[in-house]
Image 1 (spheres, rainbow, N blue to C red):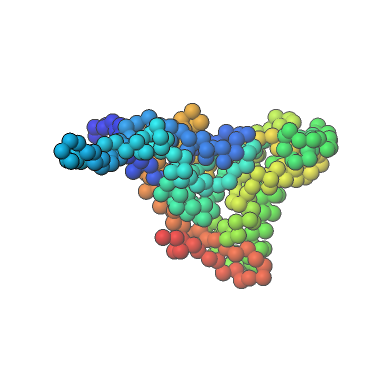
Image 2: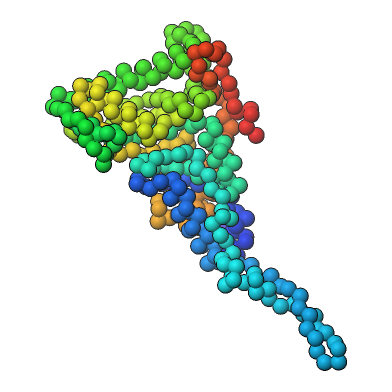
Length: 325
């Protein structure tokens, strides 16, 4: 297939609708990411061939009481008067996850008509995978680095085996908690029937759930864990690292959080900050369209269930796949 170079901004604008996968740097808020992408898109679009100024009808009088009607440029529509053709308020952007300032990694973003797709991805509650680095021996006020140290403890007694056993116990506790909140005995047939249908996901987006947690690296006093979670927040992850430190008869705080996967979106196809331009964003949209064709459950879940995790309610699960058009 021949590659056609398009230099007409209105033509490119019609194709600027979809979902992209970008790599969010740490110490950068999602709002700053949004503003940067919008600014770069407007800059690149305005550098292309934009529409000419509108024309207005001018009637001029000449000799012998005659008039001439002609078209002239409407100066009020000139870019020197009205500003660039593409303004930041013209571009609509929505994030499918609200990463904290200290979190880096995969961030799925909908642009223009793609904001509805980003919303559906968020409503489907896909699993997110994180690599989290903790520091043993110091506890801070906010459970994160660059905060006041409030406690210190020894770490010589801590080894990778001890951390592995603690994480396995925490994972089993979280899995048991899912069924208990549904009012189901984990040893019952009902629990098995619910588990084989897919991931048990809370309908309440304020209820964090951890589905897997393991140790991937240990270099005392640093340790790195990998978690699979839903509805997690940066503050919750900081508390989790703090609890791990207490469980090891010590203290700990979080020094790094990186999202390595969001559903089917991974780091391999994330756009780095120096690639947040029009050409790369359009290429990312094309790749995302192919990914959605291969995995339609990204937008329309038909297996996994969103369950009301409320002990006062029945264990009947609720699927939202049919409610999403």
